[in-house]
Amino acid sequence: MPLEWINYQDAVRFYHSGRVAYCLGSCVYKLRGGINARSGLQSELEVNAIIATHGTNKKLTYDYIPPLSNRTLFKRDAQICLYCGNRFMTADLSRDHVTPLSQGGADLWQNVVTACKRCNNHKAGRTPEQAHMQLLAIPFRPTHAEYIYLKSKRVLADQMGFLRSHFPRKSPLRDREDVVRAISGYHG
Image: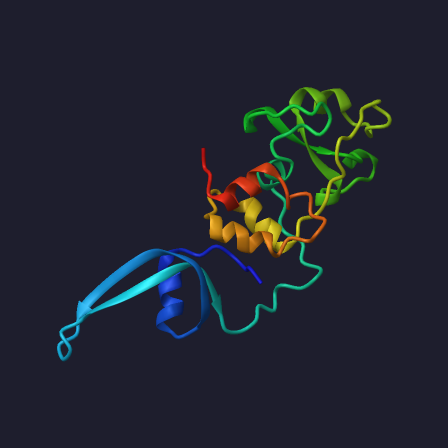
């Protein structure tokens, strides 16, 4: 199960302490150490894109709720206003509560969508129905694997393939253009 992104220094600690169960993906770092006085050989460690460690993470349960932030919300919704359907730069987006907080709505993944500032201002403190606005997609709470993808800035193709294999079969993120592009290794 994917847990989190770690830096190469933490990965080296896992390798050194014998906590790596297996590795997947390409080699992303090749580190060279000192020269062994007896053998005359230089130590070398390859760090793979994906490492699995021994043990369990008791924090991860089926009721795990990833933290909600605008950055991950906007990425979940592909920078698209879910009212007008246009794609915007982050500075022009806002978090909209489908059921407004003033009407008893909550600040939860299932009640928030990405909205451009114009649509959010037009909707104001009303529900989409009250504002006569069509919601283009149903908001959803991402799973842990989906959240790891959403909070990342850059994902290698083999890492994306691994994460995607842990997305639910009916995940709206599964066949999205940016996910497929990341798996194919295209970054243009």
